[in-house]
Length: 562
Image (cartoon, rainbow, N blue to C red; front, side, top):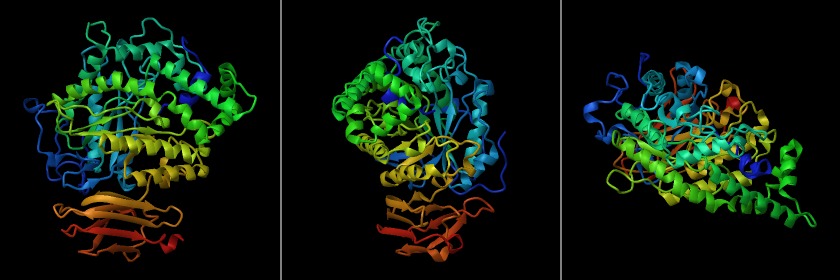
C-alpha cells in the first residue's frame, strides 16, 4: 500500500532519532496468450527454466514503450488487487465477476499483491498452496484480457507490524516497535524495530539458518518466477513495494525538518520555530492542515523536499539497486520472458527525485526488459484535506517521474495513485488533474485500490475513462475532457504492424459511429463491445499499412447525455 506521504514532510515533526479455471463461451479479443490453445495449469516446465520462449507471446519493452505480442504499443491501465490479511491467506475478495467488470471498464491489467510471508512461511519452504490461490486470480485475469503485474508487497517491512516479510526474516536485534503519530506509516520513523529490520535486510544479515535475509528474498522471488516463466498473462514482476530506508531515513528527515523551520523563519518575520514547536503543530489536526496549506507554495515546498534528495539518492544507489540486481539475477536464472519493474524509495512518492538506475541482465549488459514503476500521492492523502490536493505539488510529482523515466530510457507505469476511498464529488478536480498528467506523459497506471465501492464512487469516471489501449505504431498524444465528453487521439502508424488499433470508449462518452471522426479514413473502423451485452466499446481502427499520422476525435457527449 501507499506510504502516507505526509510523513515525509512532517514525521520528524513527530519523532526524532532513537525512537480451477472457469470455462468461457468465447475468449475476449487481445487476451494474453494464445486464444486457440487449451489453458494449462500455471506451472513451469523444469526442462526449460531460464530459456526464453518466442517473444511474440509476451509484452516486451522498446525504448519508452510497452509493446504487445502483435508489435503494437500498449498503454496499460487498471487497478491494484490485494488483501493484506494473513488470516485470509492474503487472498482478496475479488472473484470472477470483478475481473469481468474490470474488462467492461476498459482495463487491461491489474497489480496483484503477493507477500513474502505467504510465499515462504518458513526458511526455504515455499507454500505452493498459497501460490495456487494466486494462480486462480491470474487465470481470472487471463480470461478477461487483463495482464498481471505481480507486486511483492510490504508495509512496515513485516507481518509482525503490518505485512510483508515473515517473522523469521524480521531481524530487529531486540529493538522495540514504537508507534507514534496520526497514521500507521509514521512507524517507519518512530519504530526502532521497523528501522532495524530494514537495516538488516539491506545489509543481508544472516537468518537463523545462516542464509542472508536478502538472499532468502531473492530465492523466494525465483520460486515465484519459475512458476510463471511461460505464462503470457504475466506482465512482469514489481520487485519490492516502496523500499523503506530504515535508520537512514531518519537522517534524511532531519534535513527536511530543519529546512522546514528555516523556511518558516524566512517567510514569517520574527518567527523562529523550533522542531518541538513544529512537532506540536503537526500533531494537531488544525495545525497540520495549516502546515500543508503553506506547502502549497512551491517556493516553500521544493527546497524542503530537495534538502534530503542526496541522502535518498545515496540510499537508492547503495542499498536498493544492489537488492534489485540480486533479485533480478535470481529471476533471470529461471525467467527471461517477463519485465522487471523498478520502484523508488518511498520519498519519490511526493516528488523527491529518484536516483535509481537500470539493472543488468545475465550478460552483464543493460537488462532489456525493465520498466519504471513509481508511485505518486500528494501530501494530503489520508487526511481530511484530501480534496484540497495542490495541483502544483501533483504536477511536480509526475513531472519529476517523467524526467526520471526519460533519464532511465524506460516505459513508465505508475503503480499506485489516488487512494480516494469514500471521497465524494469534491475529489473530482484533483482526480481529473492526475489523469491529465498521465495523458501528458503517455504513461500506464494502476489505481490504488479496487475497493467495494469503486463502481459507485464519485470519481469512477477517472477509472472508467477513454484511452488508447493498443496502437499500431507510436502514440503521439491523447486527451479527454470529462466536462464535455470530447476525446482526441493522435498516433503515427508503423507499416510493419498489421494488427488493428484499439481505443476504449466508456458508454458515457461513446456517441455512436456518426459522432466519431477518423482522419485519414483508410479502411475505416468498427465498434466492438468491451463485454458481451455491455454498452462501453472498443473503437477498432484498421491500420493503413503506411507511415502516416492518424487522428480520432469525438466532439462532445452523446446527445442523450447532454
